[in-house]
Image 1 (cartoon, rainbow, N blue to C red):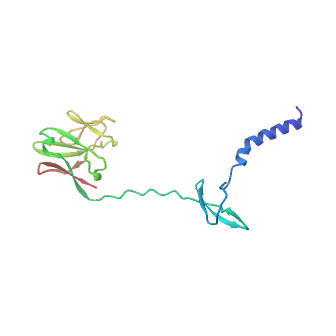
Image 2 (cartoon, rainbow, N blue to C red; image 1 turned 60 degrees about the vertical axis):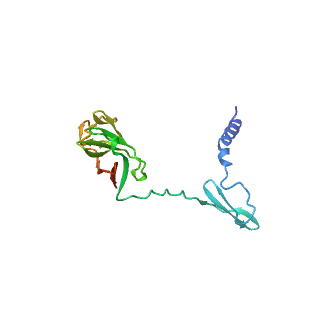
Amino acid sequence: MNRKSFLALSGAALLQLVSPFANAATGPTLKPTKLGQIIIWRKKKYTAIKSGKKLVWNKGVAIAKPKPIPPPEVHGTFDIDLAASEEVPEGMTQVFFPKDPHAQNKSFFVTRNDSVLISFDSICTHEGCQVWIGMPLLLCACHLSAYDPKTGIPVSGPSVRPLKTYPVREELGRIILTNTF
């Protein structure tokens, strides 16, 4: 193969590699039909303008991404009706998943001990994992922290802080928890 044919073949191969990019449109391929016509193409907004006697697309304006709207902040306290009083018998701990929208899909433990109710958060104070009822303790499955269901104090595992407590009371045969933000 002589030098001329090698260069010709190399040039042809290079053209095949580059041609898909060379032919890529830099603006809308649709022809504008009336002045002021607007289209969206490749995340840009184009408007039909006059250039001499012809209608053409302007250079286009990038469309900004909409910013997400943050959820409204809730401040203060509110009561959550957890359950009927008889659902937590003496010496027992129950977990409740309230349907209150302010509870943010949280669950709460309620223990009745010596006729007194006490309520705890169900989130481990070590690394924020879910805590479950494991007789006779409250257990975190992530790192095996264990909490006393009567006090919320850790009895084993890496957690050293007690579970967050919530004010809880009985009112007209119902268990009412007060959540605070």
